[in-house]
Image 1 (cartoon, one colour):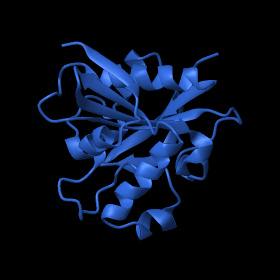
Image 2 (tube, one colour):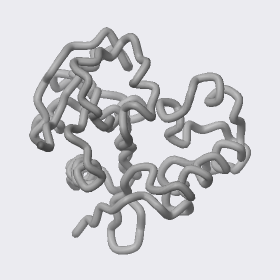
Image 3 (cartoon, rainbow, N blue to C red):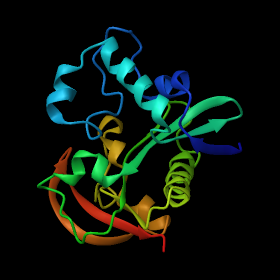
Image 4 (cartoon, rainbow, N blue to C red):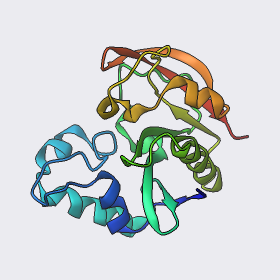
Length: 189
């Protein structure tokens, strides 16, 4: 299988990866870290998808992996200053570099175990580099090889970021699904 990763610009493809099965469902749409908490709590059902469509009108909201024409994976990446990570007390700021954050990786069931998450990390880094990012940060789980519930693995795993050239920069006080999250960074300069 050849995976092509490109900027997420097509609403239907983004919906395939992060949207609901039922239009009225209150799923994340990968907005939780992208928008202020108050707005995130106010947006319900179809309003969440409408908001993502508005964001897409302004430009890519991440990257998508394709197997041919089928969208099979998603990674959220954006300037940290435009996310809640800019204000997050559990994830430290190590300096004032205008880094980009990579905070969500999702591969569709039936396509897992084929290296798509690795391609998504590489594609997100390439997209951030093309947009002038000096570095990309991620906040993956440090699961030390233990099994992680797929629902909570969206933050990614430390070993996958290490394989993509990211280095551990700091520990955090953030815990997800019982696993500590670490701050990892890849310098693009």
